Length: 531
Ligand code: CA
Image (cartoon, rainbow, N blue to C red; front, side):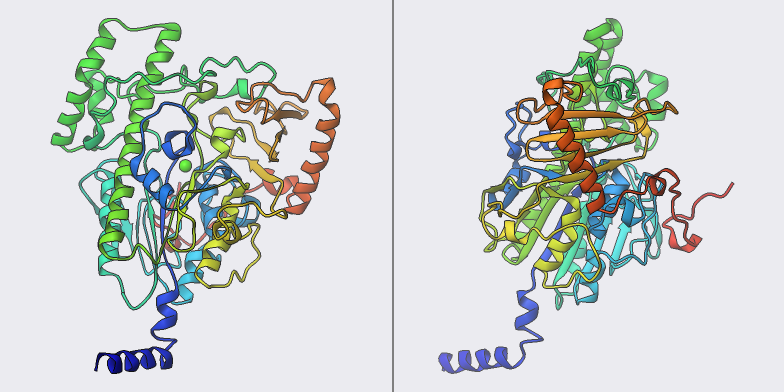
Protein backbone atom coordinates (compact mmCIF):
# COMPACT_ATOMS: atom_id res chain seq x y z
CA UNK A 1 0.00 0.00 0.00
CA UNK A 2 2.78 2.40 0.99
CA UNK A 3 4.58 1.62 -2.25
CA UNK A 4 1.45 2.40 -4.23
CA UNK A 5 1.01 5.76 -2.45
CA UNK A 6 4.67 6.56 -3.13
CA UNK A 7 4.20 5.72 -6.81
CA UNK A 8 1.17 7.98 -7.06
CA UNK A 9 3.04 10.81 -5.35
CA UNK A 10 6.00 10.27 -7.63
CA UNK A 11 3.73 10.35 -10.67
CA UNK A 12 2.07 13.55 -9.37
CA UNK A 13 5.48 15.13 -9.03
CA UNK A 14 6.30 14.26 -12.63
CA UNK A 15 3.13 15.61 -14.14
CA UNK A 16 3.21 18.93 -12.27
CA UNK A 17 6.88 19.94 -12.53
CA UNK A 18 6.14 23.62 -13.05
CA UNK A 19 4.13 23.85 -9.87
CA UNK A 20 6.03 21.66 -7.45
CA UNK A 21 9.39 20.28 -8.55
CA UNK A 22 10.76 23.35 -10.32
CA UNK A 23 9.77 25.76 -7.55
CA UNK A 24 11.34 23.58 -4.88
CA UNK A 25 14.66 23.54 -6.67
CA UNK A 26 15.10 27.29 -6.86
CA UNK A 27 17.18 28.41 -3.89
CA UNK A 28 16.09 31.05 -1.43
CA UNK A 29 18.47 33.95 -0.83
CA UNK A 30 19.16 35.71 2.46
CA UNK A 31 21.36 38.75 1.86
CA UNK A 32 22.88 40.03 5.12
CA UNK A 33 24.33 43.48 4.57
CA UNK A 34 26.23 45.55 7.14
CA UNK A 35 27.40 49.13 6.90
CA UNK A 36 31.16 49.77 7.25
CA UNK A 37 31.87 46.35 8.79
CA UNK A 38 35.43 45.66 7.77
CA UNK A 39 37.26 42.37 7.25
CA UNK A 40 39.74 43.13 10.08
CA UNK A 41 36.82 42.89 12.52
CA UNK A 42 35.75 39.38 11.38
CA UNK A 43 37.72 36.64 13.07
CA UNK A 44 37.11 34.20 10.19
CA UNK A 45 39.47 36.37 8.11
CA UNK A 46 42.34 35.18 10.36
CA UNK A 47 44.53 38.27 10.03
CA UNK A 48 46.13 37.56 13.40
CA UNK A 49 45.03 40.94 14.81
CA UNK A 50 43.99 39.61 18.23
CA UNK A 51 40.55 41.23 18.00
CA UNK A 52 37.41 39.63 19.52
CA UNK A 53 35.86 36.59 17.82
CA UNK A 54 32.74 36.87 15.66
CA UNK A 55 31.32 33.39 16.31
CA UNK A 56 28.29 33.62 14.05
CA UNK A 57 30.08 35.05 11.03
CA UNK A 58 32.70 32.36 11.61
CA UNK A 59 29.90 29.77 11.75
CA UNK A 60 28.70 31.02 8.36
CA UNK A 61 32.25 30.83 6.96
CA UNK A 62 32.66 27.29 8.31
CA UNK A 63 29.52 26.26 6.46
CA UNK A 64 30.41 28.04 3.21
CA UNK A 65 33.04 30.02 1.33
CA UNK A 66 35.00 33.05 2.49
CA UNK A 67 36.39 35.39 -0.15
CA UNK A 68 39.88 36.55 0.82
CA UNK A 69 40.09 39.11 -1.99
CA UNK A 70 36.69 40.73 -2.23
CA UNK A 71 36.56 44.44 -3.10
CA UNK A 72 34.28 47.38 -3.80
CA UNK A 73 34.60 49.77 -6.74
CA UNK A 74 33.91 53.04 -4.87
CA UNK A 75 34.42 52.83 -1.13
CA UNK A 76 31.43 54.69 0.23
CA UNK A 77 27.90 53.69 1.23
CA UNK A 78 25.49 54.83 -1.48
CA UNK A 79 27.64 54.10 -4.56
CA UNK A 80 28.60 50.64 -3.29
CA UNK A 81 24.96 49.81 -2.61
CA UNK A 82 23.95 50.90 -6.11
CA UNK A 83 26.68 48.65 -7.53
CA UNK A 84 25.49 45.69 -5.46
CA UNK A 85 21.98 46.14 -6.84
CA UNK A 86 22.85 46.74 -10.49
CA UNK A 87 26.13 44.95 -11.18
CA UNK A 88 27.54 48.18 -12.56
CA UNK A 89 30.36 50.51 -11.52
CA UNK A 90 29.37 54.01 -10.37
CA UNK A 91 29.85 55.78 -13.70
CA UNK A 92 27.21 53.56 -15.30
CA UNK A 93 24.69 53.05 -12.47
CA UNK A 94 23.84 56.71 -11.88
CA UNK A 95 25.21 56.97 -8.31
CA UNK A 96 28.73 58.35 -8.07
CA UNK A 97 28.67 59.91 -4.60
CA UNK A 98 26.72 60.07 -1.33
CA UNK A 99 24.15 62.44 -2.86
CA UNK A 100 23.00 59.90 -5.43
CA UNK A 101 19.54 58.36 -5.69
CA UNK A 102 18.83 55.00 -7.36
CA UNK A 103 16.64 55.25 -10.44
CA UNK A 104 13.60 53.07 -9.56
CA UNK A 105 13.36 52.06 -13.23
CA UNK A 106 16.82 50.49 -13.29
CA UNK A 107 17.07 46.73 -13.47
CA UNK A 108 18.44 45.07 -10.34
CA UNK A 109 18.84 41.49 -9.18
CA UNK A 110 15.96 41.62 -6.63
CA UNK A 111 13.67 43.13 -9.27
CA UNK A 112 14.61 40.43 -11.75
CA UNK A 113 13.95 37.75 -9.10
CA UNK A 114 10.56 39.27 -8.30
CA UNK A 115 9.69 39.12 -12.00
CA UNK A 116 10.75 35.48 -12.12
CA UNK A 117 8.42 34.49 -9.28
CA UNK A 118 10.38 35.16 -6.10
CA UNK A 119 8.92 36.76 -2.99
CA UNK A 120 11.27 39.70 -2.33
CA UNK A 121 11.82 41.96 0.69
CA UNK A 122 14.30 44.51 2.03
CA UNK A 123 14.53 45.81 5.59
CA UNK A 124 16.83 48.30 7.30
CA UNK A 125 19.39 50.63 5.80
CA UNK A 126 18.77 51.34 2.14
CA UNK A 127 20.47 54.71 1.68
CA UNK A 128 19.63 55.27 -1.97
CA UNK A 129 16.90 57.89 -1.37
CA UNK A 130 14.21 56.59 -3.74
CA UNK A 131 11.65 54.00 -2.64
CA UNK A 132 12.97 50.45 -3.06
CA UNK A 133 11.61 49.02 -6.29
CA UNK A 134 11.34 45.31 -7.05
CA UNK A 135 10.28 44.30 -3.55
CA UNK A 136 7.00 42.78 -2.36
CA UNK A 137 7.74 44.15 1.10
CA UNK A 138 10.06 46.90 2.27
CA UNK A 139 10.60 48.92 5.40
CA UNK A 140 13.73 51.01 5.44
CA UNK A 141 15.42 53.97 7.09
CA UNK A 142 15.40 57.33 5.43
CA UNK A 143 19.11 58.02 4.86
CA UNK A 144 21.41 56.82 7.64
CA UNK A 145 18.67 55.94 10.11
CA UNK A 146 19.12 55.96 13.88
CA UNK A 147 20.86 53.45 16.11
CA UNK A 148 18.16 53.78 18.74
CA UNK A 149 14.40 53.70 18.26
CA UNK A 150 14.69 54.05 14.48
CA UNK A 151 12.02 55.46 12.17
CA UNK A 152 11.14 52.96 9.47
CA UNK A 153 9.50 53.97 6.21
CA UNK A 154 7.34 51.58 4.22
CA UNK A 155 4.70 51.69 1.49
CA UNK A 156 2.05 52.70 4.03
CA UNK A 157 4.01 55.42 5.83
CA UNK A 158 6.41 55.46 8.74
CA UNK A 159 6.60 54.18 12.29
CA UNK A 160 9.11 54.44 15.13
CA UNK A 161 10.15 51.13 16.68
CA UNK A 162 11.68 51.09 20.14
CA UNK A 163 14.96 49.24 20.48
CA UNK A 164 18.41 49.04 18.93
CA UNK A 165 18.36 49.19 15.13
CA UNK A 166 20.30 45.94 14.62
CA UNK A 167 17.79 44.03 16.75
CA UNK A 168 14.78 45.90 15.34
CA UNK A 169 15.70 45.23 11.69
CA UNK A 170 16.32 41.53 12.39
CA UNK A 171 12.98 41.25 14.22
CA UNK A 172 11.10 42.74 11.27
CA UNK A 173 12.95 40.54 8.75
CA UNK A 174 12.33 37.34 10.72
CA UNK A 175 8.64 38.21 11.09
CA UNK A 176 8.42 38.59 7.32
CA UNK A 177 10.24 35.29 6.85
CA UNK A 178 7.74 33.44 9.01
CA UNK A 179 4.71 35.05 7.38
CA UNK A 180 5.94 35.06 3.78
CA UNK A 181 4.13 33.57 0.78
CA UNK A 182 5.40 30.00 1.12
CA UNK A 183 4.39 29.02 -2.41
CA UNK A 184 7.36 31.01 -3.76
CA UNK A 185 11.11 30.97 -3.24
CA UNK A 186 12.27 34.15 -1.51
CA UNK A 187 15.02 36.76 -1.56
CA UNK A 188 15.33 38.62 1.72
CA UNK A 189 17.74 41.52 2.26
CA UNK A 190 18.52 42.29 5.91
CA UNK A 191 20.51 45.51 6.00
CA UNK A 192 21.99 46.82 9.22
CA UNK A 193 23.08 50.35 10.02
CA UNK A 194 25.80 49.05 12.33
CA UNK A 195 28.68 49.56 12.68
CA UNK A 196 28.43 52.94 10.89
CA UNK A 197 29.59 56.11 12.67
CA UNK A 198 28.53 57.45 15.28
CA UNK A 199 28.94 54.19 17.05
CA UNK A 200 26.19 53.40 19.51
CA UNK A 201 26.18 49.74 20.50
CA UNK A 202 23.15 47.91 21.79
CA UNK A 203 22.79 47.90 25.57
CA UNK A 204 23.25 44.12 25.32
CA UNK A 205 26.85 44.69 24.14
CA UNK A 206 27.69 47.83 26.13
CA UNK A 207 29.69 46.04 28.81
CA UNK A 208 31.87 44.06 26.38
CA UNK A 209 35.66 44.61 26.21
CA UNK A 210 35.66 46.93 29.22
CA UNK A 211 38.98 45.66 30.56
CA UNK A 212 40.58 44.81 27.23
CA UNK A 213 43.37 46.85 25.65
CA UNK A 214 43.35 46.28 21.91
CA UNK A 215 46.68 46.05 20.07
CA UNK A 216 47.46 49.21 18.08
CA UNK A 217 48.06 48.88 14.33
CA UNK A 218 51.72 49.58 13.41
CA UNK A 219 50.66 52.60 11.29
CA UNK A 220 48.57 54.35 13.98
CA UNK A 221 51.04 57.25 13.92
CA UNK A 222 51.65 57.20 10.16
CA UNK A 223 53.48 60.32 8.89
CA UNK A 224 52.40 59.71 5.25
CA UNK A 225 55.89 60.04 3.84
CA UNK A 226 55.73 59.83 0.03
CA UNK A 227 51.91 59.88 0.04
CA UNK A 228 50.94 63.53 -0.33
CA UNK A 229 47.20 62.97 -0.74
CA UNK A 230 46.95 60.77 2.34
CA UNK A 231 48.56 63.53 4.41
CA UNK A 232 45.64 65.86 3.56
CA UNK A 233 42.98 63.61 5.05
CA UNK A 234 40.31 64.71 7.52
CA UNK A 235 39.59 61.31 8.98
CA UNK A 236 42.19 61.01 11.72
CA UNK A 237 41.52 59.47 15.08
CA UNK A 238 43.66 62.26 16.56
CA UNK A 239 41.98 65.36 15.09
CA UNK A 240 38.70 64.48 13.41
CA UNK A 241 36.67 62.49 15.89
CA UNK A 242 34.14 64.14 18.13
CA UNK A 243 34.80 63.34 21.77
CA UNK A 244 31.10 63.48 22.62
CA UNK A 245 29.17 62.08 19.63
CA UNK A 246 31.84 59.69 18.30
CA UNK A 247 33.47 58.56 21.51
CA UNK A 248 30.76 58.93 24.17
CA UNK A 249 33.17 61.09 26.17
CA UNK A 250 30.42 63.47 27.15
CA UNK A 251 30.07 65.92 29.97
CA UNK A 252 26.65 66.17 31.58
CA UNK A 253 25.31 68.91 29.28
CA UNK A 254 26.52 67.07 26.13
CA UNK A 255 25.02 63.74 27.19
CA UNK A 256 21.50 65.10 26.71
CA UNK A 257 22.23 65.96 23.08
CA UNK A 258 24.23 62.83 22.21
CA UNK A 259 21.69 60.52 23.86
CA UNK A 260 18.65 62.64 22.95
CA UNK A 261 16.92 59.89 21.01
CA UNK A 262 17.24 57.26 23.70
CA UNK A 263 14.40 56.46 26.11
CA UNK A 264 15.06 57.42 29.77
CA UNK A 265 15.81 53.77 30.48
CA UNK A 266 18.25 53.41 27.57
CA UNK A 267 19.90 56.70 28.53
CA UNK A 268 20.34 55.50 32.09
CA UNK A 269 22.14 52.38 30.86
CA UNK A 270 24.41 54.49 28.64
CA UNK A 271 25.30 56.96 31.37
CA UNK A 272 26.02 54.12 33.77
CA UNK A 273 28.21 52.32 31.23
CA UNK A 274 30.49 55.30 30.59
CA UNK A 275 30.25 57.18 33.88
CA UNK A 276 33.30 55.95 35.75
CA UNK A 277 35.60 55.81 32.70
CA UNK A 278 34.59 59.32 31.66
CA UNK A 279 35.15 60.65 35.18
CA UNK A 280 38.58 59.05 35.21
CA UNK A 281 39.41 60.71 31.89
CA UNK A 282 38.23 64.15 33.03
CA UNK A 283 40.16 63.93 36.29
CA UNK A 284 43.42 63.36 34.49
CA UNK A 285 43.04 63.99 30.74
CA UNK A 286 45.78 62.43 28.59
CA UNK A 287 47.51 64.57 25.96
CA UNK A 288 49.51 64.10 22.74
CA UNK A 289 50.04 60.49 21.67
CA UNK A 290 48.49 59.22 24.88
CA UNK A 291 45.25 60.98 23.96
CA UNK A 292 45.31 59.37 20.50
CA UNK A 293 45.82 56.00 22.18
CA UNK A 294 42.89 56.64 24.51
CA UNK A 295 40.67 57.64 21.58
CA UNK A 296 41.75 54.58 19.60
CA UNK A 297 40.78 52.26 22.46
CA UNK A 298 37.42 53.95 22.99
CA UNK A 299 36.71 53.92 19.23
CA UNK A 300 37.59 50.23 18.91
CA UNK A 301 35.45 49.26 21.87
CA UNK A 302 32.32 50.94 20.56
CA UNK A 303 32.90 49.89 16.94
CA UNK A 304 33.50 46.28 17.96
CA UNK A 305 30.50 46.30 20.31
CA UNK A 306 28.38 47.31 17.30
CA UNK A 307 30.02 44.46 15.34
CA UNK A 308 29.17 42.04 18.16
CA UNK A 309 25.52 43.12 17.86
CA UNK A 310 25.59 42.42 14.12
CA UNK A 311 27.22 39.04 14.75
CA UNK A 312 24.62 38.11 17.38
CA UNK A 313 21.84 38.98 14.93
CA UNK A 314 23.49 36.99 12.12
CA UNK A 315 23.27 34.09 14.58
CA UNK A 316 19.56 34.75 15.08
CA UNK A 317 18.98 34.61 11.32
CA UNK A 318 20.96 31.36 10.94
CA UNK A 319 19.07 29.82 13.87
CA UNK A 320 15.76 30.81 12.31
CA UNK A 321 16.70 29.24 8.97
CA UNK A 322 17.53 26.03 10.86
CA UNK A 323 14.29 26.16 12.85
CA UNK A 324 12.20 26.71 9.72
CA UNK A 325 14.12 23.91 7.95
CA UNK A 326 15.26 26.35 5.29
CA UNK A 327 18.98 25.86 5.79
CA UNK A 328 19.55 23.38 2.97
CA UNK A 329 17.95 25.31 0.13
CA UNK A 330 18.93 28.83 1.15
CA UNK A 331 21.94 30.77 -0.09
CA UNK A 332 23.15 33.05 2.70
CA UNK A 333 25.32 35.96 1.57
CA UNK A 334 27.07 38.05 4.17
CA UNK A 335 28.79 41.28 3.11
CA UNK A 336 29.22 44.95 3.95
CA UNK A 337 29.19 47.95 1.64
CA UNK A 338 32.94 48.57 2.02
CA UNK A 339 35.81 48.13 4.43
CA UNK A 340 36.93 50.58 7.12
CA UNK A 341 40.05 51.74 8.92
CA UNK A 342 40.52 50.49 12.44
CA UNK A 343 43.37 52.88 13.19
CA UNK A 344 45.54 51.90 10.21
CA UNK A 345 47.26 55.07 8.93
CA UNK A 346 45.79 56.81 11.99
CA UNK A 347 42.31 56.67 10.46
CA UNK A 348 38.71 55.78 10.91
CA UNK A 349 36.35 55.96 7.85
CA UNK A 350 36.84 54.56 4.33
CA UNK A 351 36.99 56.11 0.78
CA UNK A 352 40.60 55.31 -0.13
CA UNK A 353 41.65 52.63 -2.58
CA UNK A 354 44.08 51.36 0.07
CA UNK A 355 43.40 47.78 1.11
CA UNK A 356 41.44 48.20 4.36
CA UNK A 357 38.63 50.21 2.77
CA UNK A 358 38.91 48.73 -0.73
CA UNK A 359 38.10 45.29 0.69
CA UNK A 360 34.57 44.12 1.35
CA UNK A 361 33.86 41.14 3.55
CA UNK A 362 32.12 38.39 1.57
CA UNK A 363 31.00 35.03 2.88
CA UNK A 364 28.54 32.78 1.02
CA UNK A 365 26.89 29.58 2.31
CA UNK A 366 24.92 27.24 0.09
CA UNK A 367 24.69 23.70 1.44
CA UNK A 368 25.27 21.01 -1.17
CA UNK A 369 26.77 23.48 -3.67
CA UNK A 370 29.55 25.25 -1.79
CA UNK A 371 32.23 23.26 -0.02
CA UNK A 372 31.98 24.02 3.72
CA UNK A 373 34.94 25.92 5.14
CA UNK A 374 36.36 26.77 1.72
CA UNK A 375 38.31 29.96 1.02
CA UNK A 376 38.63 31.67 -2.34
CA UNK A 377 41.59 33.86 -3.31
CA UNK A 378 40.29 35.10 -6.66
CA UNK A 379 39.75 38.86 -6.93
CA UNK A 380 36.01 39.48 -6.81
CA UNK A 381 34.11 42.76 -6.68
CA UNK A 382 30.66 44.11 -5.80
CA UNK A 383 29.88 44.32 -9.53
CA UNK A 384 29.74 40.49 -9.45
CA UNK A 385 26.87 40.03 -6.99
CA UNK A 386 23.94 40.68 -9.35
CA UNK A 387 24.98 38.20 -12.09
CA UNK A 388 25.95 35.63 -9.42
CA UNK A 389 22.66 35.68 -7.55
CA UNK A 390 20.62 35.67 -10.74
CA UNK A 391 22.52 32.70 -12.12
CA UNK A 392 22.15 30.86 -8.79
CA UNK A 393 18.39 31.45 -8.94
CA UNK A 394 18.15 30.33 -12.57
CA UNK A 395 17.22 33.83 -13.74
CA UNK A 396 18.76 35.75 -16.59
CA UNK A 397 20.85 38.90 -16.28
CA UNK A 398 19.20 40.63 -19.22
CA UNK A 399 20.99 43.95 -18.98
CA UNK A 400 24.65 44.83 -19.51
CA UNK A 401 26.62 44.48 -16.27
CA UNK A 402 30.32 44.99 -15.46
CA UNK A 403 30.45 42.02 -13.12
CA UNK A 404 30.88 38.31 -13.77
CA UNK A 405 29.08 35.48 -12.04
CA UNK A 406 30.97 33.93 -9.12
CA UNK A 407 29.21 30.59 -9.68
CA UNK A 408 32.33 28.90 -11.14
CA UNK A 409 34.22 29.81 -7.94
CA UNK A 410 31.39 28.89 -5.60
CA UNK A 411 30.88 25.46 -7.09
CA UNK A 412 34.49 24.36 -7.55
CA UNK A 413 35.76 24.81 -4.00
CA UNK A 414 37.09 28.32 -4.63
CA UNK A 415 39.84 27.37 -7.08
CA UNK A 416 40.60 30.35 -9.32
CA UNK A 417 40.11 29.46 -13.00
CA UNK A 418 43.03 30.42 -15.26
CA UNK A 419 40.87 32.89 -17.17
CA UNK A 420 39.66 34.77 -14.09
CA UNK A 421 40.04 38.60 -13.98
CA UNK A 422 43.57 39.84 -13.33
CA UNK A 423 42.79 43.52 -12.69
CA UNK A 424 40.29 45.42 -10.53
CA UNK A 425 39.03 48.92 -11.21
CA UNK A 426 38.31 51.59 -8.62
CA UNK A 427 37.11 55.19 -8.75
CA UNK A 428 36.13 57.60 -5.98
CA UNK A 429 34.84 61.14 -6.46
CA UNK A 430 32.78 61.98 -3.37
CA UNK A 431 35.53 64.18 -1.93
CA UNK A 432 34.41 64.05 1.72
CA UNK A 433 36.79 63.73 4.71
CA UNK A 434 39.58 65.44 2.76
CA UNK A 435 40.00 62.40 0.53
CA UNK A 436 41.06 63.61 -2.92
CA UNK A 437 39.26 62.20 -5.93
CA UNK A 438 41.18 59.23 -7.22
CA UNK A 439 41.14 56.14 -9.39
CA UNK A 440 43.05 52.91 -8.99
CA UNK A 441 43.75 49.49 -10.38
CA UNK A 442 44.75 46.46 -8.36
CA UNK A 443 46.38 43.29 -9.58
CA UNK A 444 47.27 40.25 -7.48
CA UNK A 445 50.64 41.81 -6.68
CA UNK A 446 50.48 45.59 -7.21
CA UNK A 447 48.28 48.65 -6.90
CA UNK A 448 48.41 51.91 -8.84
CA UNK A 449 46.53 55.00 -7.63
CA UNK A 450 45.99 58.15 -9.64
CA UNK A 451 44.99 61.43 -8.01
CA UNK A 452 43.72 64.11 -10.40
CA UNK A 453 44.17 66.86 -7.82
CA UNK A 454 46.43 65.52 -5.12
CA UNK A 455 45.53 67.99 -2.42
CA UNK A 456 41.79 68.01 -2.98
CA UNK A 457 42.05 71.65 -4.05
CA UNK A 458 42.20 73.42 -7.38
CA UNK A 459 45.91 72.67 -7.56
CA UNK A 460 46.97 71.53 -11.02
CA UNK A 461 48.77 68.37 -11.87
CA UNK A 462 48.38 64.70 -11.16
CA UNK A 463 50.00 62.25 -8.84
CA UNK A 464 50.69 58.54 -9.00
CA UNK A 465 51.19 56.04 -6.21
CA UNK A 466 52.50 52.53 -6.79
CA UNK A 467 52.55 49.82 -4.13
CA UNK A 468 53.97 46.32 -4.07
CA UNK A 469 51.24 44.47 -2.17
CA UNK A 470 53.36 41.39 -1.55
CA UNK A 471 56.35 43.22 -0.03
CA UNK A 472 54.42 46.13 1.47
CA UNK A 473 50.88 44.95 2.36
CA UNK A 474 50.31 48.01 4.55
CA UNK A 475 50.99 50.32 1.57
CA UNK A 476 53.49 52.54 3.35
CA UNK A 477 56.07 52.92 0.57
CA UNK A 478 55.04 54.69 -2.62
CA UNK A 479 57.25 53.29 -5.38
CA UNK A 480 56.10 55.75 -8.07
CA UNK A 481 59.23 57.89 -7.65
CA UNK A 482 61.62 54.94 -7.29
CA UNK A 483 63.87 54.78 -10.40
CA UNK A 484 64.30 51.02 -10.01
CA UNK A 485 60.51 50.62 -10.40
CA UNK A 486 60.06 52.80 -13.50
CA UNK A 487 59.39 49.85 -15.83
CA UNK A 488 56.76 48.51 -13.43
CA UNK A 489 55.21 51.96 -13.13
CA UNK A 490 54.93 52.30 -16.91
CA UNK A 491 53.39 48.85 -17.32
CA UNK A 492 50.87 49.62 -14.56
CA UNK A 493 50.00 52.97 -16.17
CA UNK A 494 49.36 51.15 -19.44
CA UNK A 495 47.15 48.65 -17.63
CA UNK A 496 45.36 51.55 -15.91
CA UNK A 497 44.49 53.14 -19.26
CA UNK A 498 43.38 49.80 -20.68
CA UNK A 499 41.20 49.08 -17.66
CA UNK A 500 39.53 52.47 -17.93
CA UNK A 501 38.80 51.76 -21.57
CA UNK A 502 37.54 48.28 -20.73
CA UNK A 503 34.97 49.74 -18.33
CA UNK A 504 34.25 52.66 -20.66
CA UNK A 505 35.21 55.27 -18.08
CA UNK A 506 37.43 57.59 -20.07
CA UNK A 507 35.17 60.64 -20.11
CA UNK A 508 36.54 62.91 -17.35
CA UNK A 509 33.61 65.30 -17.59
CA UNK A 510 31.13 62.54 -16.94
CA UNK A 511 32.45 62.50 -13.35
CA UNK A 512 33.49 66.09 -12.79
CA UNK A 513 30.16 67.54 -13.86
CA UNK A 514 28.00 64.77 -12.51
CA UNK A 515 24.87 65.94 -10.76
CA UNK A 516 22.59 63.57 -8.93
CA UNK A 517 19.67 62.41 -11.01
CA UNK A 518 16.37 63.97 -9.89
CA UNK A 519 13.06 62.11 -9.65
CA UNK A 520 9.46 63.20 -8.95
CA UNK A 521 8.85 63.86 -5.21
CA UNK A 522 6.68 60.73 -4.85
CA UNK A 523 9.62 58.56 -5.93
CA UNK A 524 11.52 59.38 -2.72
CA UNK A 525 11.25 57.65 0.63
CA UNK A 526 11.08 61.17 2.01
CA UNK A 527 10.64 63.92 -0.57
CA UNK A 528 13.78 66.09 -0.72
CA UNK A 529 13.57 69.41 1.13
CA UNK A 530 13.04 72.40 -1.15
CA UNK A 531 14.66 75.70 -0.37
CA1 CA B 1 29.11 52.16 4.36
